[in-house]
Image (cartoon, rainbow, N blue to C red; front, side):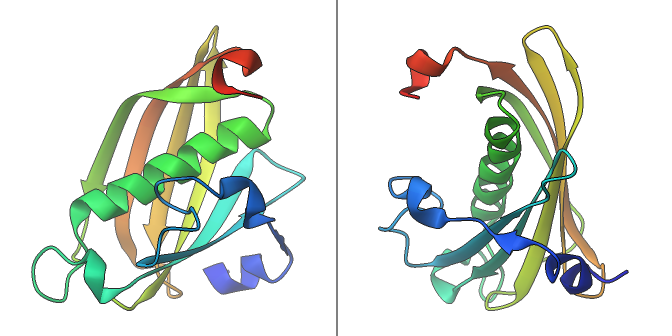
Length: 149
């Protein structure tokens, strides 16, 4: 199944709760994001478009921009599954350069939990399933009041 086919069954997530996020907040003009949640699984999805202002090498999205978006979507999957957490470790593997102005899709999911640790994986692909980056992270659960929830 191609990624856009999966998205047609998902409801877009209300982005108003991300008003002040570094990655998806209202001040962000160079990365277009729409989040989606699958209510029946521990997965979280995003459709992303990096504009030319996110480039590192000419015409190529900066690796830091890719890492930031993966980090946010991985953190979001923990929050939306009632496990608020912060990043303890993030590893990103870049498989091929991502051209600016190309729409890509992110899928993140919780692999397992151990005590306060949440192990999350993510991948960034295009509509034909070509892999641009994947990630693994360890997130640490925090009390709701510690992060303003």
